[in-house]
Image (tube, rainbow, N blue to C red; front, side, top):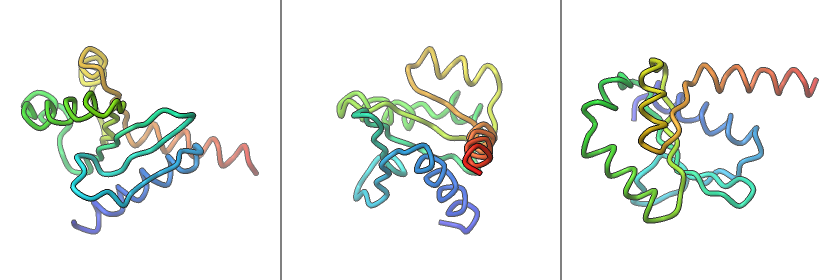
Length: 118
């Protein structure tokens, strides 16, 4: 994994931890990058640091289906964190039953929380 990818993944997991999620990054043979648990609910988080989100969602086909199948099988909510998505991407994610969130939105929420704590 390249340094930029590791940095993106570390940033994502840090933000989830800041929201009091229990983050498990030591997953062997896992479909997602990490799992989180919050108030008894499990989330499988996939980070797409370099991928064009629209291309992935529209042509990801087999990979996206694998993520959704694995999430259904394990009763986990799928969360895909991207660099940037279009309004159509976010609407598509709602119709497919997973959460798509941009890192910019997570960064804004993180900054707001840190400001409130100071």
